[in-house]
Amino acid sequence: EIVLTQSPGTLSLSPGERATLSCRASQSVNSSYLAWYQQKPGQAPRLLIYGASSRATGIPDRFSGRGSGTDFTLSISGLEPEDFAVYYCQQYGSSLWTFGQGTQVEVK
Amino acid sequence: HLQLQESGPGLVKPSETLSLTCTVSGVSISGSSYYWGWIRQSPGKGLEWIGSVYYTGSSYSNSSLKSRVSIFVDTSTNQFSLKLSSVTAADTALYYCAASLASYCVGVSCYGWFDPWGQGTLVIVSS
Image (cartoon, rainbow over all chains, first blue to last red; front, side):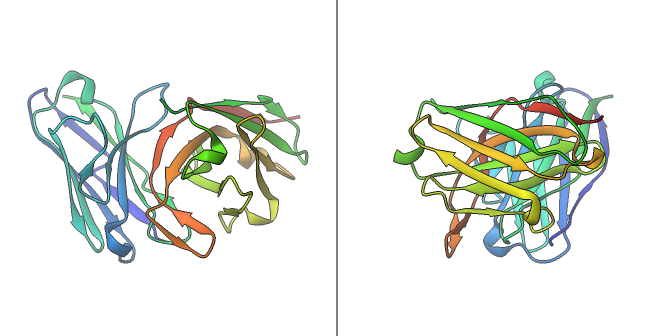
């Protein structure tokens, strides 16, 4: 099983600031098969990024993903009020899909 | 516009079988390239993939749950379902259904990201 560890657990930032979220895998993720999701209270997760760096349909370009192997990053350039939420990474490069434990981006 | 909606009992007794159904709208289960999955979310274990199924009925699941999980499709009603047997309090969670497109396949098992998700349904296991 590939364990995904996200850091930090909580990120306290102000609107307009840049957020950098990390997702580290316990072993290499095949072909960068990694996705990022955003979840707001009372809502299902929403796909942001797939294939480590491809934005899903309708996702603003302030969201960007990068990385390969075991280290992946989600960046949000210029936080908007609606971006304060919990973010999860997920790997689908092995036969057992796994998720990270999440990073909460909160208003400072 | 693809949408999914979970339904089923919100309360299940320990040792019984949890049964949930996901109704798909906006696309035909049998006419699309999607794989249909179940994921659950609990405070203790976070997000956990349960299993997935293709319209042909071919299914695959999380090895940690495999012996208790059954996932199947009903193309006539455009639904797919989850059965989880011998439940305990540890199975209390918010259960989501979701669609995935295959990034790659190993035999009949295909893997990809989840998009979209249903709104989720809370299942509590308690006597």
